[in-house]
Image 1 (cartoon, each protein chain N blue to C red):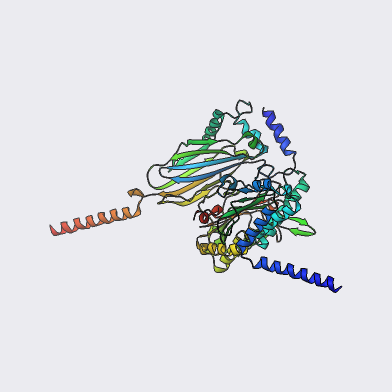
Image 2 (cartoon, one colour):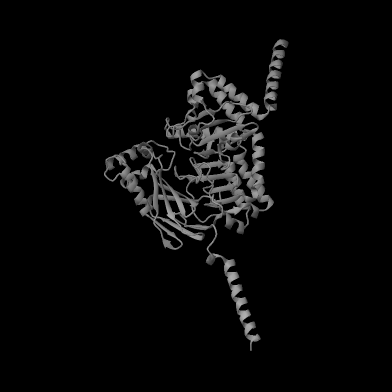
Length: 208
Length: 340
């Protein structure tokens, strides 16, 4: 069957002019910031020339059919190739859904595999979310973007990427910050300590 | 002789009068008139194929940058129409667009015809494979929609009273530079040239803000990404001077003024009102040879606007294969007036 994928690719290649991505695997991540979690939708679009490479990791039994089990197994493998960290600690993504296009669409280089996963984020305040995508690096091009947050009180403060967009860092603030992240709280606490100290000095001087 | 001259003068007067009447008509009634004229050329089966319910969500989103041979379109294909029907269809598209907008559409279609001729794939490319459809009933009051597109073109024009809403629409080109009848044609040349001119007009600090340090290999909000708003990046127009802001508006007009002039004016005013919150981002080479397309990606994003210009690697020459998208994430498909 693998040979079949190669023959098909050659057949499509020999058609002359093409209209869409051929020899790259486009991996586009869209990030949504939600209460208590980061939701990521990964759209995976293999060009026809790299389809045999991608299919080898999907149709593991080589029967030319992508079963539900193979779909889920592939999605889990994709997640396994991601390195995700929240606030400096390694985090495990939880698969939410996987959607495969019709095989014919994939064969024509038109289909898009969609993998949706969530990463838990605890507490409000400032957070740092980092995602590194190592899946099929040799043939892939990447896009990664964060949607404008819909929830009030959530705002993006910084985004950084490497040149290929295979590594992405997102800094954001969600809701009320815990007191130790709040500069004003530290200021007030410092003021109280200072006043207390002055009060003690004044009291001591009065009782000498 | 006098009789012949008299008849010619009468014919000339009638034609002049009808042209004047058409030009003097309000834009919406002109588009509705052209739609009804087109529908009038069709038989019952063709009419049922071209007409869809205004709320037909499946048809509404059935557009793509890909050829109709790869992603099937509904409606009527130009290749299935008689010359008179085809001419009426193109007259409708022309009525909905500005002069420059229609010219751009024709140049994109001419390019696809060249792709067919040069690539030899007749089932995938060419002017015959552009499709027209109408959602709803052409009306001067109730909202309806005209869709026209094929490979590298998707126009979604919602007519709602005096409004003409062109979002989302996709314009693209391959070849993005070709010679036709001895003339060099660049369907998306103005978009490229005006954006490069704006970039060149920025000072070093502004350019540092505008130019992203990463590669953008494709459209982020292309087909299928309706209603999404990504976190903006680049240089904010509020950090530009008046001249630079005017140049930015001029770049934007290459998309916003594809629709007919009466609809483009309020749209440009709306975009201008949100200009302070509009961002300009660039990825790729910052220089270009005059008269040629560059190979850089750029994005313009405002409260009610998304424009992306994305050179494509396919075909080997990024400057000769370009995809662009034009959106209003708050009002794609004219959902706002339609909901009223």
